[in-house]
Image 1 (tube, rainbow, N blue to C red):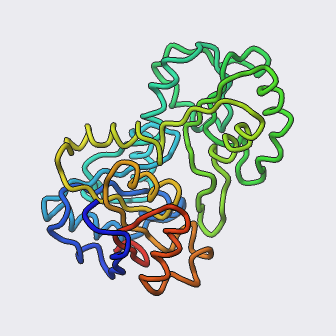
Image 2: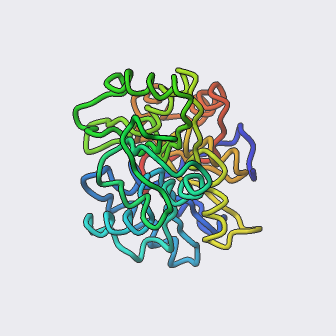
Length: 282
């Protein structure tokens, strides 16, 4: 990393670091949109970075493919000129699914079914499954991980492996926090189940993004609001990190977010480092 833990800087705009990075890996949910509306300020900031010659890769723990996420961004009218490419946890997870058992139980909503497109797998009922592919809760607007206790216990008793296509625990949808597949993976691991993950903060998604961006030897800045996904992932990958404060940890960090010193200490207590912090991406 290019700066020490003690030198976290509060910045007002992404343009404050113009000229310092060649590639941006930018989170999607909570940074460029909240699941319902886009952030025009984030859109403008990323477009301006691209106009300066910076490559922008949107890096998301969505369990869906990059094509599906691009379509979602289009629905939100997020400009295609704001990014060069999209890399998803779903993209990185497909390799794990390919190498596992053929008969899968899809634990997640029907909208994520594109994850399996073109793969030589058979989606089966729970009692026939040889493995679990978790993309989320079936009805994430009204369910919690506790609703899956019996199902997960049954899988654990049978010794089935779980591939988790979205390591996020929660995500913002408008003003609400919605549970993600990572919450189910957390519960399954607590039962002794074996879980495989490819999304942030794990290496496969960063390695894939680096290949897509041709980022070998380039200066990379990772942008995101998730401490244990975006920031931890940047730390593990050896890239610099920009923490977006107004995100899923906003309440948790509200007492320390205004000053660089206390915020640096709060990150240190969690074993994390960020070079910069910003209120929201703009």
